[in-house]
Length: 457
Image 1 (cartoon, rainbow, N blue to C red):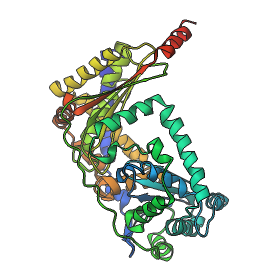
Image 2 (spheres, rainbow, N blue to C red):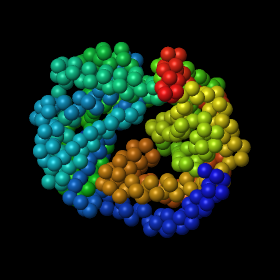
Image 3 (cartoon, rainbow, N blue to C red):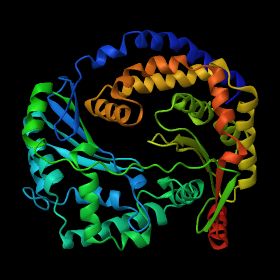
């Protein structure tokens, strides 16, 4: 893309800012005016957002447990429970949960991160009573049958092989994560280390479930065609009798400031080299979270982003450049991911990436770049709230990590308030050599030769 084309594109983003700003001024808070909350006697907090656009409901049950709460010997156990929670309890035995839910038009899923494990249900409002019965059953009476434990252990181990051991990008990321954190448990991979997956005992599983799957360690989000009172009544009937437990021990370890660049080299069968690097940043609730988000968008989001123009289009030394940021309970990482062509030059990509980051630190970003990033973020905000699933995900994210669900409705104004000076300050604070961990995946010689032959055909 030429500089003139970039200027035209930036101009279009500036012209569209008025429309987005007008939408922002339409009081995002009015969207959530019907939200109600209640904390049950056993400590579970429930947040209900009525939305009658369609006769469906979604629930997100956020348990505040992830690999951050693990230690050597039980790594991956949180992710294991993500699987076990679908495998039977006192009332709904193995397979019953899915069968009954599907028979009533519902579906479910779950995910685990370093910080949380979240269970999701999507269903017609006619199944509301059933869903609360199911959730009460598996929270209070999860079955930890030895045969099922053995079966799911094999499933999890297979998932590790496919998603990490045989996935070069994820394998490199795991190595970087483990090198970037030396003290804080964020160095533990969510899926767990192989030897631990093989050896959790049933006693360890029972104790972990008792500690972390208590209602006082969870937040339930309910969005859709419901009235808050009927949700609270059902919660009092089905969930409130589940006893609370002593709160889990807090994670108190803080990662010390990194004293210098760390480097990880992985040599593995691969068709292309990979380059990744990660910088320590603040936690999800920190004031500069949105400044970091906008900065990463300026650098990597879209064809007109800085790194895509310089690395993919102009010099053609990379196939793809992307980024992400961790937004958890504790300070995490900002990531850069670069996919190179076969026989690509890792050193050139590293040098150009650092040149572009240094330029932001030295000279900041342009008004047009910041305007574009804000427009993208605000457009994403409005799009995310168009569905009941998006509403539930956003409520849970803000309630859990960003200082309370009420802050969700301040998001458009918060993005608008970010200045170029704040962007430059964030870059200078975090994107420095001593704060980064670099990862290189170098294809082994035999795969390099095979890739060359394939390319020459």
